[in-house]
Length: 238
Figure: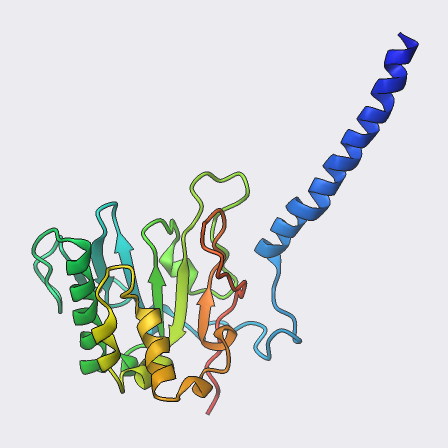
């Protein structure tokens, strides 16, 4: 009995040390990712002023549904018009289900639409989400907002991306880059945008991903290209 206690005591101590290590290196780190706000060293714009960004400043673009149905809303306000395979009104009308390659064609049409209609003059920010992003889009334009997902959540948010109208306007100077996109997973607004900037030696216009391209935290995902920047680039005062 005494020998068993002598064995159990150090085992319990080791278990406590291990649990403490997990807490300090995982739980606290995860909490940090949720609550951390950038310091002055991380950004000259720690957070945006209240009411700097509102619903009508943001254009939302999303993939929705298990069958990759395609939906685009013109803004986050009550008068929004949907571009969808489920509706009959909108700038682009998708009348049927389609293959992934057909989706790539529709993506190209959509990008041409954004540029030809000068959507960069209508909205300050463009916002893309994946189909598994269970988020309130009205809250998502709040720089203090954090996607509602934690380490215990089985259904974690996918990805939400912001980029500025200035960047879209620059990329619209070259739509020929779209010709190389033939597969559905190649045609993303962000990939085209940065490829177009690089091709025309305009990459220097983008100070960093931090300034123009914000990925809200994406956990429990196979994707690794994460930038934890829970804030928006504030518009410069003129």
